[in-house]
Length: 525
Length: 115
Image (cartoon, rainbow over all chains, first blue to last red; front, side):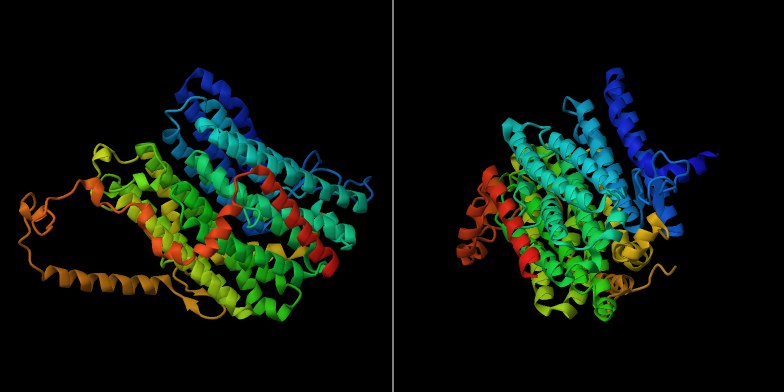
């Protein structure tokens, strides 16, 4: 077996194994020297990203990839003596999973590169990078697994590592308090998820998502399990009115971590969509659940943006915008769900709304990651997040200012940046479903632009302030990290249709094609 | 694969490349207008100083409009809305847990009983 064959065959397992290995070796590498540690973490992140791209390529070219742990063959899902039940842990990587893998890989590389500079002045970096790789493993595991209990395990790995990362700076106890809030709410959510898993196992003797989907009856117990999962995962992705942990956690974590927390929240959003579309699909009342998702989306958009406008802390302001942008994703996919049972409406606008919502997940990860990194670069140089204390930094931090402008215009949905393409898809398809919802989405975009005009003026415009006379541009690795994301924001904005055709449409199709998912795991069983 | 293909939204189309061509054309026209302007500006002279009707220039920090001064009118106009919304964000963990459980219960009633 050549190395290429090995990578192709075992990519789903390596996607989790490499970051876990990197995490546990990191403290040892740090004992040798900081240079060795930095080389180790950057090398391992690049290898992990390469594996993610190889896996995504395979999925988009050949279809869903199955990986059965401990089986004689990687795709041998149902042992002969198991009574037709896939009892082993199975990773089922379809186009939606591969889509999320790409996001995690790109943001992971950018954030790690950025961290090499941004965190270089801090101590305890072995712990920082260990937790970072555990977050990477958690996200890759959540989006790749085909087993609901396994999903819970990776969700917990991600939550624990994220809580550690949020508390990393301590910050006079404030960061620890934010981490504690996140940790306790996550634990309550995890209990909900575990309870739902117990319901499925009690009813269907299975933990495999495809098996549960095949046997789904939508009994009262299934309804309870659905609600528990929807509530827990909506809370984890920061949907209003379950968003309260988000501003504290996003604003007090190191900026590099915040950029990756966006991806972590999106992994929960993925989980929410996976449960709704793959496990339940048309067996449930799609109109009711679709409208619940839409209401979560509208509340998130409106409350997020209006709470952002009066904020004085730049990262807290950006955190509220992250909540607001999550609303667009929920709105788009919620509309797709609400018309799922109606083939005519789905083909008329439902599928387009879903494509818009899913495309926005990608775009949001790029421009919001970029914005948090620019906020981190400013904090790195002037040591404050308070907008009232900033001004005139455009004179000295020109590249950071350009990156901020790119991110700000993208989040506000200004052409030709990537946010415009996905928002346009959402506006136009949602307008056909309910014009009022599309109008709300457009007004929220205008308010987003207004908010970022304020931030841009407060940070970069005005005369060069005496207290920041000696401020320099951010270090090169930080600029490269921001540059990667900025380049993608521009490229995906200029050439959106190929992106939609190659990764977004297959991801949306994978979500709604419940039969295809079940067949990829159980075959004709 | 056509890189420049427009996005089909189901309702209309969006062609970023066409937009970019139009944008560049506008920038070129604006540049040509700008080039016809007065070019007597000299760096490092009195021309660089702000004109304040003969008054002494204040400290740089005093003339910069800080973040808190922006959108005052917007916030005042929506005071009633903010008076409700901001206090909900108490920062108290137990409040957040109550929200979480209450929303779960509400969704459960809608999905489990009403639908």
